[in-house]
Amino acid sequence: MYKKVDKDDMQSEEYSIIKQCMDGNADIYSVLVERYKGMVYNVAYRMLGETESANDMAQESFISAYIALKDFKKNSKFSTWLCSIAINKCRDHLRSKKDTVSIDEIAEVSVSKIATPEDAACNRQISHDIQTALNELPEEYREAVVLKHVEGLDYNEMENVLGVSSNTLKIRTHRGREMLKKLLRERGISHG
Image (cartoon, rainbow, N blue to C red; front, side, top):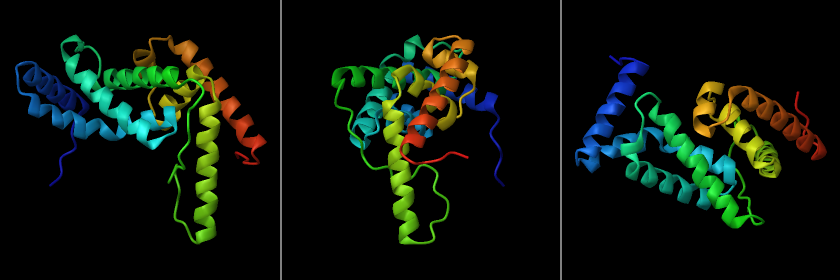
């Protein structure tokens, strides 16, 4: 029978894994990589809009996190700490590329059952338009929208990731959403 894992149990397990890594058992780190690779890739992809760069930044994030495990504070969640590393890697990558954030077509944003090839093409176009609009948002608004609406973090977790107050993040999230809606309306995509 499947047993639901308690968040506190998972956090204790993660602290144990981190301690084992710091004691020399590097192989156990793969448990954390497996657990969070989807989250880290998704954040990187939404920030960068490009599959190859997202893969690179996700990999760099896990490497940096492993190297910095000694700096991890047990009063925060590992996932939040890891997410902040990924955001910083993406920021650095964007700064290095400044004017050349390329866009891969998104296979899916949240596509329900696709009835026809025309529906599939339409959904791909909408996904592409959403990612393009996300890429046009100023960095601080894109970060807030991605963390809140794509990753589902609460404002306290976002505060830990970005080092910005919850009130500021609420404003950034709201403004980012409004900018995104405006950009999508300009592309002929209405939001209900």
